[in-house]
Amino acid sequence: MTIVRIAAAAASSCLAFSVNAATQQELQDALVGNTFQGDMGGGGYSSYFGENGTYHDASTSGRYEITDDGVCYPDTEFGCYQATIDGTSLEWMKDGESAGTGEILEGDALDLMPD
Image (tube, rainbow, N blue to C red):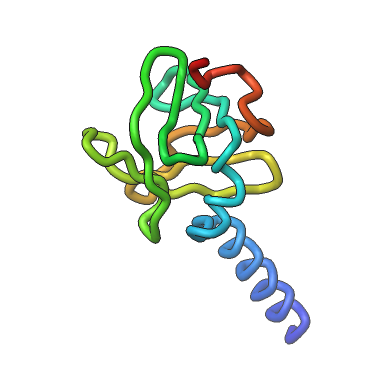
């Protein structure tokens, strides 16, 4: 019986760990200088996170900040998004709920930076 309790506790702690939001440093390491490609808000999008604090997608660009609150978009209505990262897979979270999923691609893989 004790083994079952230990196994259940271990499984629940692993489960809890897997849904923890990425830290500020993990977000910086994963996103800065790389591209996110996936789905958010019911539609597909791709965004390159420049080292200079600007993001670029197919039709817009703007400032982003990576803080303790997640990836934040000042001067927009987007606010901040937390994320969970597993290898190159990323899931955006907003107010504790999934807001989108996708992959992190190395560098400006989709040539989103202007010349």
